[in-house]
Image 1 (cartoon, rainbow, N blue to C red):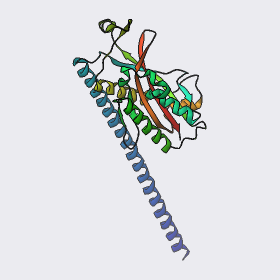
Image 2: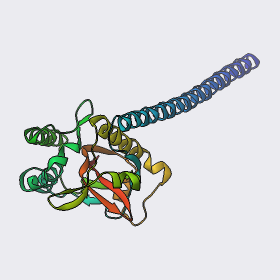
Image 3: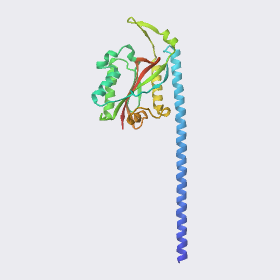
Image 4: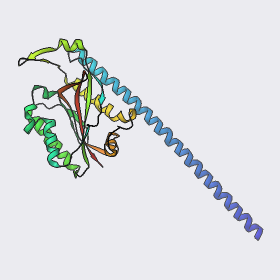
Length: 263
């Protein structure tokens, strides 16, 4: 009886061990499949991004041939001054007034304001320029309603990021487009709507991939670097401000701004 019992125990142990081996093998196979699937998805995403980037470049080239300003995206610029805490609803309202050129900032709304591109947040991201003063005000109201749905506390959870979007244009093109407005020398750059939207998309794509090239921004707090890495943050608002171009070391740039809420 003892011998039979031992044999049964041994058989049971062999069965258990074999089952565990099969389970471990299946787990390893499943893990390998998941890794291979993730790698495949990453490759596919990379291919889609490359193709999207090519599509964007083709759009820009086509619009330039049709008469749009010969301007191309040339990179993003980050600095220690990029991030600012939004510590109250009043500060948020003031920021939105500035971005949309409303209320006290209405004086900034010249003819070039139609070149600004604003993101319309919601279930599906949309972005476009404002068609009129009334449209800008309506867009700001919609932005405030979206932000309200995210329930910001303004207790260290909301930041605005202002980065420079550098644009490439030749000196020859700049000379061609010089003119005098109100007895002042200036340069007029005319963009098609498709060209503007393509520049916005380039900013968006390069901003998302920025941390892959530079993992961390020196001189910034951990909170700001967390936002820079897009780690556990949601976008409350975003815009590309083309109406106030400026120069930095002979490089032309416009402002690409995003308001984030930390989850």
